[in-house]
Image (cartoon, rainbow, N blue to C red; front, side, top):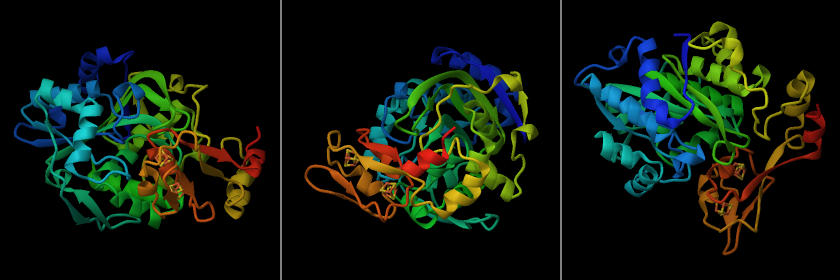
Length: 381
Ligand code: SF4
Ligand code: SF4
């Protein structure tokens, strides 16, 4: 379970060939799917964005996995519920599928796309923190799930990859309820780890051909990485992804929570990397999100920041010149502190919990992340 397989893949034209190599290294698709099974392909379809923006899993990756799934006689179906601002309905799904290139993949490769927008409450007594989830029906009904995630930075959780991709099984705006209840990043991360355990993908495959750096998961910059990665363990895969980004262990809530929950592996030394040299993975100049306390000392992280979190912080700011008053940020805000008049959105800063869902969802990149003076002081390198 702690093995992560890696192949070099310099562009999306090579994905078919490289995906074959990757799956062969893991024993072939027959290890993960059997004839007659219904397999959910779960890409990251956060928002309707073109594949070249590197926000969503590239359609070439979904097509290649779909082809291999069909080759063993199983039936793949593309399934995801996009970000928290979007109602989980057919209109949302149609828009996301067509913009993100999934409709084309479905037509060309004969892969089904999900249009069932029902969901059910499931119990998960094994959860460390959360023991019940609302989950979309096709995931519950499938024989197995393939987690087709994207390597990206994330304003709230520092990174998003395999574990966080499980959040897309929660229907539409129901996701905001989890942010509202679990305002601390560590609790939210712990919930994602529980959800990932519930989904229990048979395989997680990461699109890191072109990932995202900076202020992801929507408004960072595409970054060429040139890798495809796969693992039976979403957590092991994310540990390697964090290493590629150069994300310090003390700043990665996923690793901190995994260790606290007793999950294995919970750090890089415990992961076996197959296919490339482990020491070559880190990209030294990879840009991390502005919200990360990248330069803070251990004392600042453990004492100062928790004590003075309202002052040592990064706040979302609306750029009035870019805002179109579309209301998406208002719908995404889990604590409902954004109002929108005819001209632009406004944030009630005193009540903002700094989850950055508004920044994540704004289609116009009209929300900037501004660090306070004290934040800049404690993060001075
Ligand atoms: S800030 Fe962005 S999401 Fe919010 S209303 Fe303006 S354009 Fe829409
Ligand atoms: S306004 Fe604050 S609480 Fe609301 S979505 Fe944005 S960061 Fe989160």
